[in-house]
Length: 614
Image 1: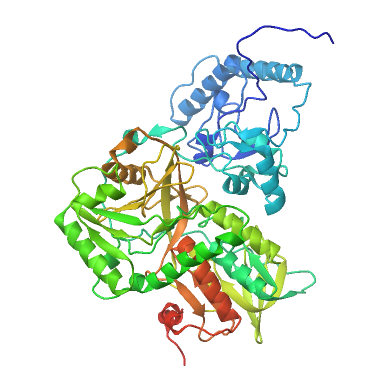
Image 2: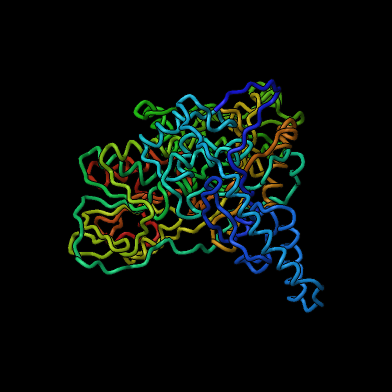
């Protein structure tokens, strides 16, 4: 082949256009996996745009690239179907539109075949950047896949940040998929998030009414279908941990390091649900907007502060045992007050905290801007806790998972618990066709802990409470502490890469098709309004995504301990999972191992809900 040189200013390379399927995916439309021109999910539809959702039609290149004539034919056929459904007169020329659709679909298939690439793309070198938004190289991706045993794109995203930038994976997803097993369904791709494109905070921020208390929702069952095993044999292990979130993984890690054989059952992917959707605050103080701040004397949240502070110290001490940076930083927490009632609330809160040994103090207006220079002028004062901090929850969860596997923990992903039965002093734990015989069971199932406890005849008042979070594009340093408001729902902090994480307990909803947690627009608007009210410069910063996860609502404190009338059945559940994970994991492991137990932890026992038979 003759080589020629052409003098140009710009070279554009295309390795395969694919339709933007985020909107139909968010609406719950069925997706098919396509591998040409690159691997991607594609909305299943009929020639008239019909999808499996009766109220959603997808026409033109929103479903598949086919050219203008094919899109016109689809548009006419879709309009005719909708007119017929509403009892209106059908337009003329429908047969011509059907013929146009058939002819152009056939012609387009020939075009795809004619212009099919004849030269495959080379395997990228380790220094090649696969994710331009987050500057993630092929070498980093390959290392995490090999070392962490990653098999799905969502886990790779959490481990490397690939696909988390402004494009949300639209440009790099196909390249990342090449280092993973062939996807079998839509679930093997990353979930689309809103907004679908970057939007300035100021364009979304709207004042919304404040509220007290989490919104509890009925959630779909987390249990699997019981299947009778052909052999009836059960593998013998020391402990079965139900739930592969960060609390369950820490418990399994500490048990394995003590020489116990441990199996973790996770109905989804380990660390992918509440732990993977956490905003990463390390709380050492009471949340000012929580009703517990108004309680005289130590409430359950206040009595948990000692455990939270212990756990934060554990995070700092443990960081050296992991093979990656967890981005832990004790940066202090600042709560600002707008009104005199806010100030009174903070004085009461700080008094309780100081009585419990927390390093907290009241600030006057002049001290606020020494901590947060970009804070809006006019706040009356605030409260500051030097012990508050932040962590990268995605890196932390993946690090604990990798460490647990190296310690010998077997993590059974996509394995939903179906039954627990007593066999003398042992438990028979079943998940699908598999079963294990274990001396102890640790219930670390988060929002599904009540359902798991019911399998052994106990009731735990654990309720699902979906919460949502927001993340912006990376910007220059803007927020230096963990920032909150005295009477409005807000937590605001800046991650190591410059992105701002905005949360504070705003409730999410449930996807009406799949039942997954899904952000609510009005709560996104309200959360952003409060954040911009504190830091006006946020208005010009772009929101790149929001997400929701299933948190839990109990009585303001973790559930930690052995069931008083079912020896060997332990519970380790908390709504403040990332903060409390190392301490709760360590203490429940010590309880299973029958090491010396701390009397101060008895207040967290499940016995508080149904009494102690002793």
